[in-house]
Structures are given as C-alpha cells and as structure tokens.
Length: 264
Length: 247
Picture 1: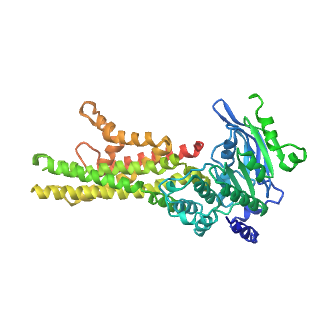
Picture 2 (picture 1 turned 90 degrees about the horizontal axis):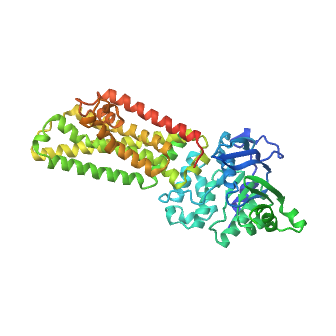
Picture 3 (picture 1 turned 90 degrees about the vertical axis):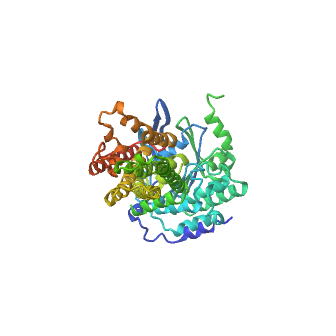
C-alpha cells in the first residue's frame, strides 16, 4: 500500500492557508491541551480531573481498560460532549470554536458511522459539502485509503476493514494537522495494520500530531512515541516508550501494574 | 450555509429512504382514492364537501409521509452514527438542524404536491368514469394542492423537531403516526369534541388545504397555526440538539 501522497502533501509550503488566524501558534504551543477535565454521568465520574498536552509531530497512544474514560475524553475534546469542569482545547481553542475544524482535526470515533444504503463516495461528498472542502479531496482520500474501486458501492457491502479505511478517509478529507482515532486497527488485516502504522508514522514525521486509543498493546508499542494510561477517568501514567525501554520495562508490564490494582 | 444545505440535500438523495417513502405514499393515495371513488355509493360522494374530503386524503398522506421524512432525516443519522462525522465537520450543531429543516421542508413540499395533486386527479377521474358530477371547482383544486404542499412542508419541519428531541427512530416514527392516525381522530370524535380538536396540528393541516370549512379553521388561520407548530417544533429540536451531548 502507498503512503506517498502524505509526503508530497506535507512537504509543500503551507503558504497562505485559508485560516491565517489559526496559524499564529508558535511551534512550541501544544496541539492538544487538556486541563483538569472532568465529566460525570449521573453519579459516575467518567473523566476525573484529567490533564495532558500533546505537541506537534508526536504519536500518542491513549490506553486504559474498558470504561476508563478514553472515548469520553475524545468526545469532550471533539465538542460532542460538554465537560462538567475543566477544558479540552485543540490548537488553543475549543473544538466548536474552530472556523473549519475539518481542516485542523480529523477524527474517527466509531468504525461503523455510515448509512448502510449510501455509497462511500456519497458519504464523503456530503461531509465535504458541509465542511466547504474541495470536492476533489473526495477522490484523493478514496485513492489514499485504496477504496477507489469500491467508492460507488453501498457501504453495506464493505468489510469491517474497508469501513475502517472509509472512516479514516473521512477524517483526512480536510487535510488536518491532528488525527484523533479511537481503536483504528480493529478489523484491519495484517497488511492493513502495517499500512496504518506506516501512514501514521509518516503523518507525524511530516509534523502531524496523532492521538490514538487502543487495546492492542503490541501494536501500540510498534507505532507510538509515548503513551497516556488512564484508569477510572484519571491519568495514571505518561511515558515515552524509549524511556520505558531504557528502564528495562515493557509497555505491557507497565500497563498491567497500573491498571489492575483492585482487580488482583 | 449553502454547503450545509447541499450536504443535507445529498444525504436525502443518496439513500433509497425517500424513494421508498414516496412509493409507499403514492400507493396509499391510489388505494384510498380508488376505494373511496369506486366503493362509496354515489350519494356519499356527490356533494362538494364529501368530494373535498375524499380528495383531501392526499393532503393527509402527504403530511404523514413528509413528517416521517423530516423525522428520519435526523433519527436515521443518530441510528447509523453518521451524526458523529456530521457534527465533527459542523460542530455548530444548530446549523445542521437548520439545514435539515430547510431541506426537509423542500422535500416535504414535493411530497405534499405529489400526494395532493395525484389524489385530486385520480379522485376526479374515478368520479368522472362513474358519471358523478365533480362539484370541486378550480379554486378548491388550487387550495387542495398548494395547501397540501404547504401543510406537508410545515409537517416536515415538525418531524425534524420531534426527531431531534426524541432521537430514537422507532418511538419517533410510531409517535408521529399514532398522533396523526389515531390521537387526532379521537380528539375530533363527537363524544370528546370540545371544539379544541381543530387547533391540533393535523387538523390545522387539513384546514390549510381548504377541507371541511364547516368544522375546521379557515385556511389562512390553519396556515398561521401550523406555521407556529412548525416553528415551535424546530426550536425545540434546535435547543435539544445544541444543549445535549451527542449520543
């Protein structure tokens, strides 16, 4: 599979972007800035005083047991839910305050957010229209994720792996600087996993930022630069993978030590 | 906002949902006009009021299916999860609701036009074949069709609002159908009639297309009242969508 399109895209001079006001951040500003973020559902505190920042050019794995608050955190970051307190900022603003968010942030939260009776191409065209994105991007991202030949087929005929790639295509429509992916490797075959890993590495190497949640620690260990581990809504560890290796620890040991207290 | 409207239009055109709704609606129009026109004894379909009522079944079906079309425009997105990418691209969710109301009203008007027009046309032909004089005049036809289109457009907006508030597809569809097919009929029943049933949104839609001037509101009053219902439902849907977390 090819990821050449990304390199060519990233190498070009950013030039006069359509949203100059958003380009005023110095290189040191965090791309994602989560401060004291808290979200409650009834009596349950799903996210509990969570703080972290992400910087350009990094791939961060977002780990934690089921129900730890990973997806809720991503939803808060993307403006789909409102926090009880604290804030989650992307490029220094709340997501809903971004003028054309699809040009800054691409996100996939579920692997099957499609109408089964709509073609993959029409799904992307509807999003491109709503986001005022160039119509030509639809064909480009379909080629990028290798769905060109299936573009006019209805999504109900797609395999899980094809749906994952269509979701990624939607996230890439606006040529974003930040990718937020919830379990993107689910349903991908080994070649697809390899392609995704190569893609994310090149995306980050070209200055993009990636936040990716996952349960597959072996895959995470091969892909990310650093991990955030949360448990019961709280951040329990933040570590660079090379530092873990220097200390002679594996990601799995660290993860299990920090997240199974009370269960053992 | 133009891109938003085009996006919603493409969403409505790119699945078979609306086509299936239109086919179902036209089948029912044909069914009811044939049964009324052929099955009823001549003495029950020879007056203007009776003929208006028979032809007006088109208005009713247009309103019902336009309401469902509007509701499905949002509950289908929630059911299939496309609401997430929709709101990621357009995080100002009120704009999405506004575009859905606009496009659904347009499609709903088309549904109302087709249903009212075909009902009146089929009804008149059937009566003509039976040799029954058609008492409905040109002004009546114009009001049936134009009013039927306007009523269906406004009901499409009501559908979007209800769908946005209820969110779950099955209760939304069952609720709208039950209201129009059953609840308003009960409210208008002789035993319960306190004169208030003509202010209900289904009755206002009938009034708007000029039916039963004896018991319903005047067409203009029906139009104003139904527009108020539509505005209230759209506002409720807008509030519910902008204030609540996305499911």
